Image 1 (tube, rainbow, N blue to C red):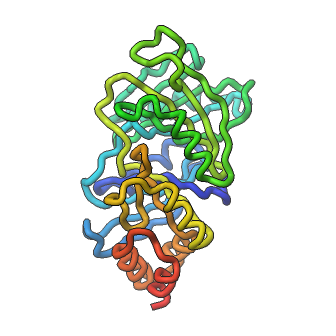
Image 2 (cartoon, rainbow, N blue to C red):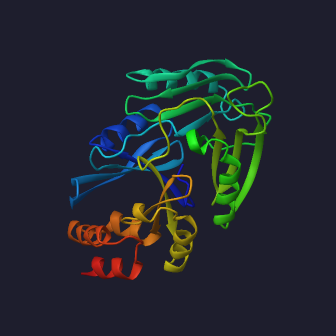
Image 3 (tube, one colour):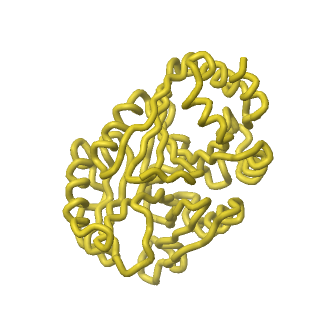
Length: 304
């Protein structure tokens, strides 16, 4: 099942394992596959593999580009196993959990919790975290895979501000369900966000605060790639989202909460999929010289 209108694509940064990881996820989850592999020559970290893959209808991209950033649980992926969609949902959840457990670490054991009959949070052998849920079928249907943001440390307590900010930046956006911490959940503060969901460009996200001690925060290892139809649209997102000038590089930026985004023209995806090795190399070399991407210059490089 390909989601043709997915405009925000999670991007995973690995040292050398992007292809291996993508093939692993394609083998773990239902209806998943690796869709494209391109090698970028002569990047600052040597030759880098760029892999496009799908996990249960959700597009992902992964890159092998050196040991600079390490994936951590500040961004995880919720996986909804919905008994109203699939009568074997519970068995499938256990099956996926068992596959992700090989070489992985359970962050919350697979068990019954107040919010779900069956839930587990696991970090797989590549460091990526998944929250597996047996969904309550009475609620409104959600996609199988949903990126989830965890606001910890200095960011804790900022989830509410963040979700209002993101829904103001993206044109096609809305808030979903919000649940707050009650009294007596220390160290979490009453009224901060225990769970929230919001939609940006037809893509659901969830976000929550956690005041527990975590030794991680948002970094570049997981970024969100936003495909833009025009230079004007790209300029608008860049202006609204970029909050850390020194993080601006090759279409990447960091927002005020430390979340990384890549703002890219949709045509660039087509160039990378359809170009000759020479064209791809020229586009890549042009990209490396830019902070914000310039569509006209990318076309120039592509056309040689």
